Length: 318
Image (cartoon, rainbow, N blue to C red):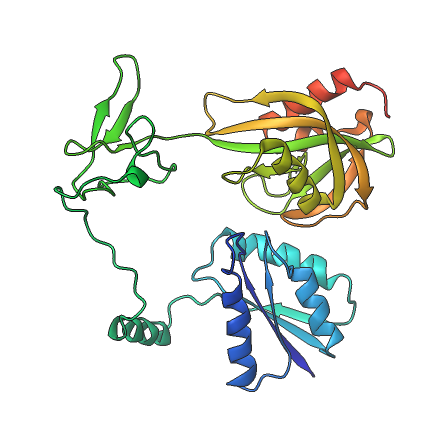
């Protein structure tokens, strides 16, 4: 049996970060003599798992062995990747396929860590910023506070001292703040953008291939990148998830909830190109007639509310 190795990682939009996996595949091919080695990313960038699987078969493989290039058996390894691999394998009846364990705990992992410790060249030195260091303009937020993500902080990333709860406004929430400098950990919301559009008399929805709400349905959309216009992000995410080119008609609404850290901006759009297909972060992409919307299987409250608002504006199929 002619075997192929397909190495899979999560994927990242950060420029150059996905090149790491290509180098790992080259090592397996050149140093260890494996004849058919390809790599793929679970989401965000190409090659996708489908493309990697197809490449293995095109090179003559009778069996594709998928290795999750992850440290542990988290949700991506136990649920997301198996679903995407199963979908990819379905296009190649008769081709054997199996998924290995992730990297996990192994004695050779320890050897790699020891090598990294012994070779500090290229390390990223991180240390507490001295208290007497002058804070530059790059360090300052317009309101003289650094805004961070929702990640939990215990120590100040500016001066290294412990953070303590502090109420910045009499009627405001307690925030993690530094008593020595002006750093405050704000739990800023994230912004997501998406589109609702009609195609062949129905609304385009995508079935999620990632958590949360794995396997549930939602309109195409995703997070807005820093420096990206919100409407541009909505168009981009639609293309990335369902392979459709759309143009914005109007702002449908903005959805936010007391128990959610995400603000969702949804646009009504029209399809101007492309062919409907499930792509990044998607198990499936379908058209649902307004009378067939899977209300009980929608991923989020915002999906339910946005579809209701959309149908109020566009009650009849276009």
